[in-house]
Amino acid sequence: MVAVGYSVGAPSRNAKSVPRRPIWGTLSIMSDDEQWYFRVSDKAVVQGKDAGAMDRMGPYPDRATAERALEIAAERNKAADDADDSWSS
Image (cartoon, rainbow, N blue to C red; front, side, top):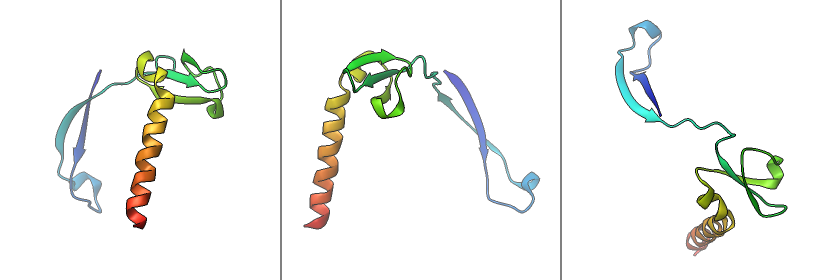
């Protein structure tokens, strides 16, 4: 994990006059080679981008989640369909 600090303040014409307040958080940075993907063409779970964008789903944080890629997509599609149905009724 990497500590991330940034400042916020009111917009100003002179950026130097913007009040700065540090805000600290954490950001987990994983390279593409460390993340997991589901390859649609052969339903394989792979680590790293070894397939083209149209043939992969992800990234996922771990192998177990990537193995559930189709199930996760189905759940998200159902939720979106349900939201559409409730909007139109």
